[in-house]
Length: 62
Image 1 (cartoon, rainbow, N blue to C red):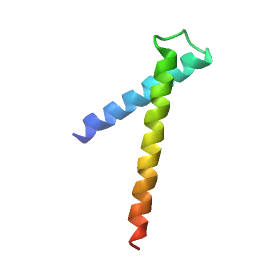
Image 2: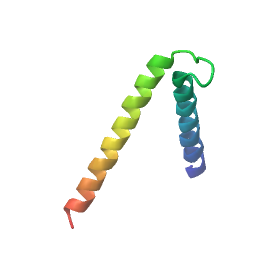
Image 3: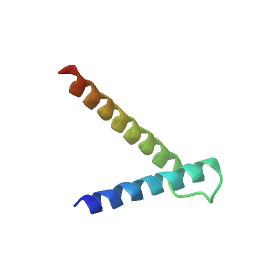
Image 4: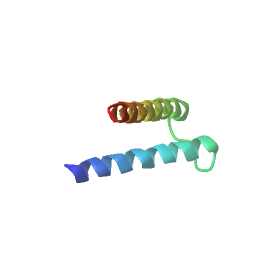
């Protein structure tokens, strides 16, 4: 299961990278670039907040 999760995460990062390159104009324009960039921003922001909150709750008990 860990291998499948790693492959999915790597695929998500690769797709996000392709859309970032598309938005900057380095590669051809991908479909729904603006929408995809907003979705990627929201997902990574939520991921960052979840990680930060996890660190806060872990260190609160020390």
